[in-house]
Every structure is written in structure tokens, then in C-alpha cells.
Image 1: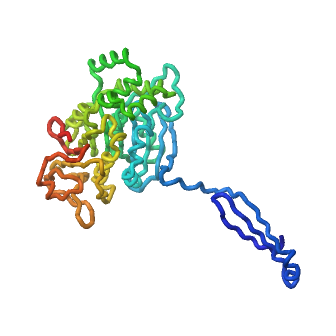
Image 2: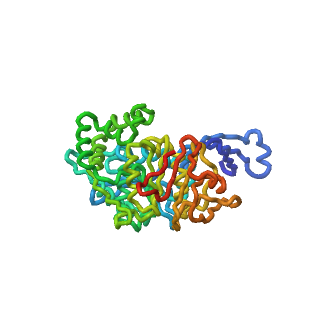
Image 3: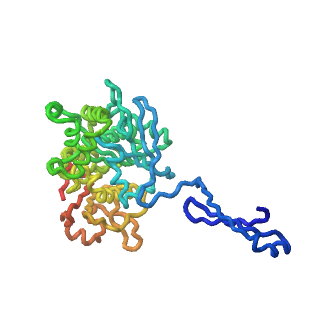
Length: 427
């Protein structure tokens, strides 16, 4: 309609009303025929928005899925966030019977963890055949060894053009990241190793494994690897969910191959004071009464005490990243801050328990800075030696009761450079 005026108003996210009103032209003709010429036509126009709608705050932004061909087969991984200048990527590797979602989702969705990882790009690696919708490997397929799975990581970093990582691994994934760190120490700035067993299976372990295989199914054997005996006896909700997931897994034959590779792993041959050791800051984590508690304690005794922190978590079972994500996040927060990547630590103490830190008298740039000034909340250089101290507690109060156990239910202890046996007091 010539000379018309177009009015557009948004009435919904996707729908627009158009109000076209006749002007009647110029001069007196418009006034003379005002009653007949003034018309209003309403049209509904559907508009397709090019930009997708924002996700609600409760839903995490989905990661970008990638896969890359390596000398040992295809490996899939998911990337969250964008690379940050002069900062390493956080790279995770899951345990047997899990994938990156079932192993790490509760931890990385935790509110305080979100505050940490917004400073980094995160790469979740799925072992071959463990990703969702993975096709089954053909009969007789030679699955990569754990050493070969570690050798796939450089292909991932080269594909993404990343130069360094902070690794977080659980069980078999912890072993893989430790093996990778031994062969590529210059690319690893820190490691969080949960439930790591650095030892190869001995003859007695091998015989027991074979005997168990005659009387137990693969899902039950993997459950005994993942959870404590108390959790299995109590048939907790997490155990039930994992059992149902394993029994009904469409890729169970793939999981069995990963499980076999884990049980035929080589000894990492760590030696305190020797050439074979982890050269980056390491935080070892294990749950109290977890199936791998003794192995992690032994691992701690073999690593450099000036580089290693040992975290034993009470009431967390065999998978502390799933059962106690809050406490693990708090420990990881101090670990990363000690590496100089987070300028301050949130002062709020998590409600699920206290955190105790004990620092050996060593001078390292990555030392965990627990003391904070009351004004700026900025880290303060720690004296040598440093007394055991509760997070959020004044230094004088900590010194008044050194070595006292945390009164909070489910407290945890983080020690630096344990004694000769590598053990630490349990909370």
C-alpha cells in the first residue's frame, strides 16, 4: 500500500505482529475519505532467528566433540571453553567402566568448580570405544595398551594446538596421564591422580583376577574396581546406577577390552630420588577405605615429597569425584592457585567439611598458599615451616592445636611430602 507506514512490534520470541495503517495520501483527499480509507491490517510473520536462544543458567553449555586419528586408532574428545593465553588446558581421562560424562560430570558441574574452569579450556578424553554411541570393535580387535593410550595424547594436543596441560585422571585414566607425563614432562604443568595404582599386577594378583573371572561377570569385576566393599555391600544408589549402566551397556565388549588393557599394565617404576619420577606438582587423591587406598599410599611414598600432595578423603568411597565433588573442588582450588593461575581463593568454606593442609618446609613456586590477608584476601608468602592449618582459620588458632583432627564430618587432610611410608593421618 503506497505511502503506508509500517509498525513492527515483538510479541514473542519467534512471532512478530505487523500493523500496516493506510495514510490516505497527501492533501485533502486523505481527510475527505478518512472513514473509508483508514484501514488496519494485522499480519503475523514468522521470523527465524539466526542466533540460537541462550541456554537457561541451569544447563551447562555443551562442549564441541572432536575425534582424531592416531597410530593406535581413533580417539574422541570433547572441548569446553576457549583457549586462554599462557594457560594450560585441563585434560581429563576417565576410569574403566565409565566415560568422561559419568566420571567427571558431577565434579565439573559443581558451582565452585565452574568458577575455576572458566579460567581454562577443558578437554575431556574418552578412551577408544567408550564414547557415547561408539561402534563395537570387531572380534579379535587388538585394543591399545595403556602405554599406547598415553601416546595418543600428543595427537590430541597437536590437533588442538595446545602446548601444556593440567591432567585430572581417575583409575586407569590416572595411570595413563602419569605415563604420558613420564614421556612428555615438558608439556605437563600439574597432575591430579585419583585412585592411581602405578604397579603392574603380580602373579598373586593375576591368579586372583583369573579366579574371580570364573565366578563373577565383567560388570561385577569392574564394580569391585570402582567402589569400596562397604559401598557394594550397602548397594548405594551410585553403585546401582553404575551396575545398571554396565549391564545394559551396548558397548560392553569395548569396555571389556579397556578393562583387559588396565589389568595388563606395566609397572611405572617410580623411585623417590631416582630418574623415573613425576617432575610436576602432583595431588594424589583416594577415598578412605577405597579399593586402591594402599596403592595410592605406596605411590605417595615413591614420589618426590617436595612435589607431591596427598589427599585422603573420608566418607567418599571409591569415587570421590562423584560422591564428594565439593571437597575435591576445594582441594583442587588451592592446588591450581599454588601454581599461580588463580589470583585468589574464595573465602567461603564449603558446608560439607573442613580442609586441612600441611606443607613441608620446602621453597617451591607452586607451594599451596593457605594463609590469606584479612583485607585483600590475597595469598601471603608462607613461612618455613608451615603449621597445619584449617581453611578460613586464623594462623594463631591453627598453631594452638597443631595436628588436631577436623571436627567436621567428612573432613579431609592434604599433606605435603609424607613420611617414609608416605601415609598420612586419616580424618
